[in-house]
Image (cartoon, rainbow, N blue to C red):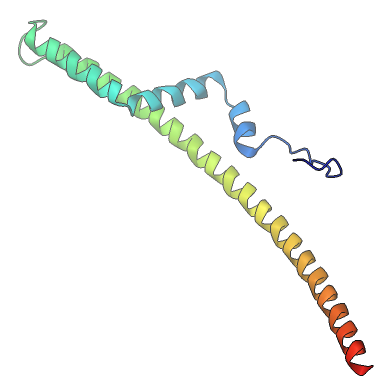
Length: 134
C-alpha cells in the first residue's frame, strides 16, 4: 500500500548508465570482443578450428599460415582486452566517487537524525524529571 502523502524523490541516472551512455561505438565493440574472447564459445570455436586445421591438410607441418593468423589474432585481442580493462578501471573510479558521495550524504543524514534523537531524548528526560518533581 502506498502513502499518497509521501513524495517520491526523482533520482538522476545512476553512474553506470551515465558511463555506458558515453561509450563510443569503438569502445562498445572492444568491450563486446573482450566479453566474447572470455567465453567458452570462443574456446570451442578455436578447438574446432585447430582440429580442422590439423586433420584436414590445409598446409604442411610447420603451419606457418596458422602461426601468423594466431599471432595477429593475439595482438589484436590483447589490444582489445587492454582497452576494455582501461575502461573498467575508469568505470571503477566513477563508482568509487559515487560511493564516496553516497557515504558522505548518508553520514550527514545520520548526524542529523542523531541530533534529532538527542533533542527528543533530552525533552523526554526533562518531562520525566518534571513529573518526578511533582
